[in-house]
Length: 482
Image: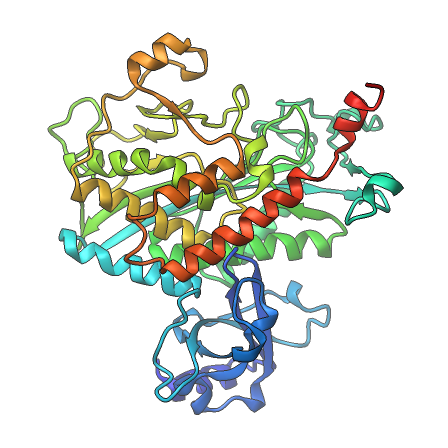
């Protein structure tokens, strides 16, 4: 479809507004809506001169802020009616790529997340590969309400009091209807009436398929109480899968708000309970051949290329955490005893390892893949896919041996046993992860520019510094009498 064709499509679909979507360097979605009658072929050929990038977190300074939004017309979809209270108004969505303004307007902005993952995809050809496929597992919470105490944010919080409360009909602390109560860690696959969010999840899945064309593999309630949900997306090509994650995350929030609820992808909102992850299933292909499959490997059915790919992920796992687990709250998830990985190793079907090789369908060339279990849903999906792919390709390039798979429950291994397996630990804080990224970023530098990495780490260090200086209610309760 060309520039003329997309305009005809918008007209034939009776679209009133087109929303042009992009994310900042941390994955937060931004949108500009343009009436359909104002669009012309030049907008789709040369871009929309609509962005003051100095107002976008992590983008440009005010003295050099003009930027072009170039629509990717392959991402055109009609938005579900929930995006507008007036269901008579019809909206569409198109992702845009970000370009520098200048004499030719052909230079991709180096902090454009879609541009970064696109450059990473280009590296596949160096290894005789044509595509990487991704199957994200999105976990999140939907609460009835989240209350921040009046002075919980900002410099005055220590003086005015701070705290928050979570309301959910499933919460064990709520009382009320015992038929919907779910205890801590008791929320895996419950049926109605205890699962109060099944209808919402199905509505979301129906909409993402009908309107966005995204296929869902499964949906269910997750382990935690108080509305922890999971939606697994059927695997797809790199950029398509990343766009799908952005679309689903946004629709989850919009649907929840429409129903008077609050959806959050914050990993660990509830003390003492499981947190939300975003496990990433990955496979490498050459045309229609899955290059991670080897029928001669009776134990794992994993090819040598697949093993080297795992070796690269494990080699760079600590540095990857700065992108895969990019918030201070992320490291409240990466602790033992809550089904989250804390050790850098791999296993076959082992959910206590950072990487596992699923063994659901033996002999299936199509389904052979690896699952990276470290990331959480606060990650910028474009940067996450790019960094994981580059780490894995570095493993292939340098033939990094991942060692033997670990089959024991790693949470129960002693320190001596971990040393015998040469198992190292993941970072325990955002600062540790950022330090690791600063000392290990060579595998990224062909795709992530130095300017981008410096800006990203600087802003994240500032975020950690603010967190580290902020007293919490827990600290006050522990130490105020000292």
